[in-house]
Length: 277
Image 1 (cartoon, rainbow, N blue to C red):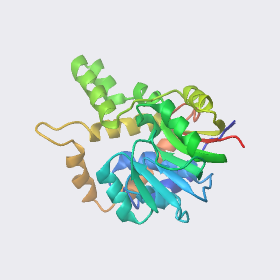
Image 2: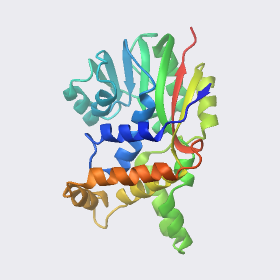
Image 3: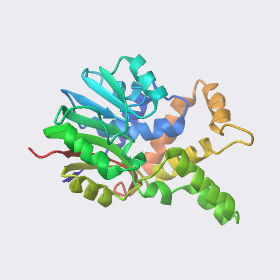
């Protein structure tokens, strides 16, 4: 297995690309920039299954020339957005472990930040193995256990003596993201191997400084407001009213990349794995 470390310039180019979709949502543009940079080291073609497809906008940004794509999403409203996007030749409203497609019918499976949400990971990976042609690949981004360990805001709140509030923040964060499988990289690798898949490459995403700031921004964004909604409902209009925000945050992002000293340990990862010939 190859371990690849991204370069700062690659990640900043990723930020420039994803800003077209998320110019005023800094935690999302921050995370997606790393993913985008990692995906640029790979190519997918032929018939593709997008597992947990969402609205299709991010898929099209990454893979503008892939035109034979089947989406799967369990949320009917989200699947409908995917249908309207024109990205997918077909979309199934289905569970990831019950894809209504024939055996060995896909050249590639793409799963962007979806496997960590799956309640039955072993069944999902078995389904991916079933759907892939021999030699086909799964390209996916996932979160690791550091997604929990490096969560700054609950840790600070607990240090300040508010243990109940800290526990509530952790629970709300985990519930919102449905983090069922925040596994260490070695456990992700073992999960793939148990499903009969060969791990070809691991790319760490968001090491400690970037990971910590991302988690602080994301946790703050999703803190529940008294009454209804979340803090992002207040933050977004404030940021979107500033025409210089995206370019200004890019400079902050560049500074965070400059601060990193250990790029190996991370709160996310991209894996490429394949089904044996």
